[in-house]
Image (cartoon, rainbow, N blue to C red):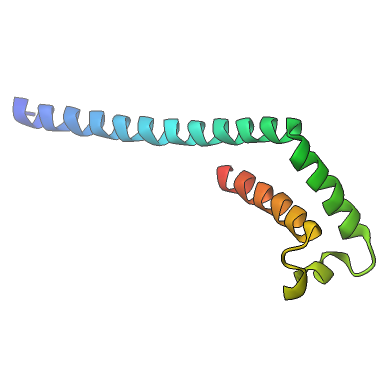
Length: 95
């Protein structure tokens, strides 16, 4: 193998390792951000209240479907449902 070929092979291996490192760090950062979100959510009184209301409404006869009507879109209950669903969405994006 000539010195030029050796340099190209070494450069290629170095590039692959660098790409792998960047992808790994990105994955770790996403998971860390998700854990931070979970920690914040567990301490946020608004989210805790929304979660309680969400569970209460989900257990009611008819479940959450009753709150999907256009006339109930601006209601406090619908807003709490959206808050909880948005939290679930953010968590799922992180993992």
